[in-house]
Image 1 (spheres, rainbow, N blue to C red):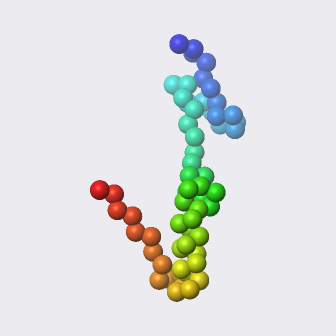
Image 2 (image 1 turned 90 degrees about the horizontal axis):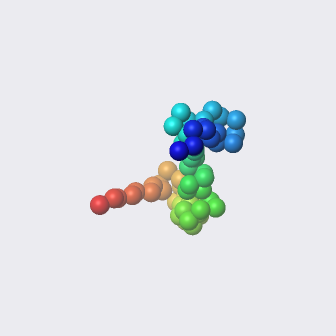
Length: 62
């Protein structure tokens, strides 16, 4: 196995085991440009019509 540690390319230090660890943000995994975009569009529309304080997203995992 290669003993060289690989950095994430952003100047952050390499993980001791050689793994590259990525930092994810909500925007990068569920932002407007992802498959979640239409959900946020509907929620914004509902917030405009009924007030943001009356709009909630409830998720259930079974």
